[in-house]
Length: 428
Image (cartoon, one colour):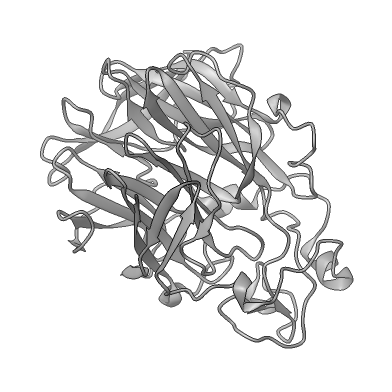
C-alpha cells in the first residue's frame, strides 16, 4: 500500500493548516514546560495501576527506513520490517536471534508492508500482502498474495497467487478497497483470525474479521468489528474537530477462552489537522519544528510549531465468542493517534500507539491487567517526531520489546535523518 496515497486521500474536515496558521485555531497550544517533553533518551521507572514499569533507553536499529513492524517465529527469532528509504517503496529487514539484543541484516523477501507475517504452531511461517483484488466473474471473491517459509524466514516460497478472500457481496462492494491492514493471530483450535480494514463509502473505513482454516491460503468473512456508525460515544470524544478515516489499522489480541480485544485508529490528520498557534521562537527543536517542515511545506520558515491538541482517540471493541460478535466500539480515555499494536504476556496486555498530536510526535505504551477494560497511565517511551507507527511483542512474562521510528514530520522526505529504534520494557 502507498501510505502517502492512503493518508493523502481527502476526507471531510473542519480546519486547514493554512487556517490554523492564520488564526492560531481554537485548539489549545501544548504546554511548553520541559515536563511535557521528556528527554528522548532517558530511561525511567514508574508505578502505575499496581505495576512497576521499567522503560530502558531507546537504541537505534536502522537508519533511513520508517513504518516498522515486527514478526516473531516459533524458534523465538525476530524479523523487523520497515519501509526502505521511500514511503511505499521496498521493504528493508533485520533479524535477531537473542530477543532483540543484537541484530543483523536480513533479506525482507516480501513486498507490501510485512504486516501479517506470522508462524502458526504447526506449519510454515506466512506473510500475507495487504492488498486484495476482486476476482472477475466471482462476486464477493477476492485474490490474495502470500509467501511461505519452512525454516523461519531463511528461504521463501512465493509470491503465491492461489489464495482467496470471500466476502458477502451484499455487505462489501467489489470496487472498494479491502486490505489485510491489521494483524493475524492463531486460536487454540488452529484457526487463524485476521483483522482487516475496508472502505464502505468513498475513503471511509470500517474494520472486520476474517478466518482461515488452511494456514492462510483461503479466508472467509466472520464479522464486522467497528465503523463510524457503530461508535458508542455519547460524550462526543471522537468529534473534537479532527477529520476521521473511520476505524482502520485494527489490531486484535486473544486473551484466552474466546475473549478478543480489538483496538483501531480513527484520525485522518493528513486532512486539515488541528494545530497549536505558531511561535516566533523556540526552546528545543526536539519538540518544535518550523512551518516548512510540516506537510506540504508551505508554512513560514520563521514560525515554529509544537504538538497541538490531542489527536483523535483510538477505539476499542471486545468479543466473548472468538470474534463472532463484537461490542460497540468506544473511544479510549488516553490512547490516541495512529497504528495501535498490542502484545499479551499471559497476564498483562500492553498497547503501543504514536502520533499523539500534530505535527506527529511521541509514542506511548499503556498496560491493562483486566483484559483491556481499564488502562494504566501512558508512558511516552519514544518522544520523537514520528510517523506514529509502532509495534510490540511479548518476549516472556513481564518482558516486552517495542519498536518505533524517528522521522521529520510529513511528507517524510529527509530519509537520511530517519531511524528505527527499539525499547526494552519490563513490568513486575
